[in-house]
Length: 212
Image (cartoon, rainbow, N blue to C red):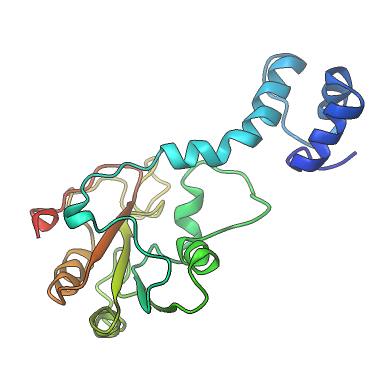
């Protein structure tokens, strides 16, 4: 027995034993088999494992790239990573989820791929919902002395999902909640190259901020 999500183990079984053993392996592993038949199980749970990264990449939509801001250089001197979703595990899970073996937040992903000489400055900036200003000025300050800024805004499972599962199941507006819009405008006023990443499962509006 082993971990059905371990790519090396699955490759080894394929190479040494063939598909019949993989089906047996899948049947014996501790994974939910609430689907139709072993073949479908293998196709969904094994082949799907290797396609998750590609699926994640293809789910990203680039709405605008003013002045060819992207891609950012890896050897930036200073990079500001700001926003309530920059280091938020909740946003990685959504409303329907299992228990992943590893969590990688945007901040962790950037930190692991950026040039080692680049100094990363992180600030939450604001809360997704609550008008908490404790980190607001800090976020604007680090944006001001960085070479580029990446903002991670959006929503979270706390405010979008099935009725009864969230703090407020019905959203009264499509605007970014809390202080996010105000923080976005404050960061844009610094004049630094800024990348806005929205992490949300339902629509949001920027009310003209995308034109700035």
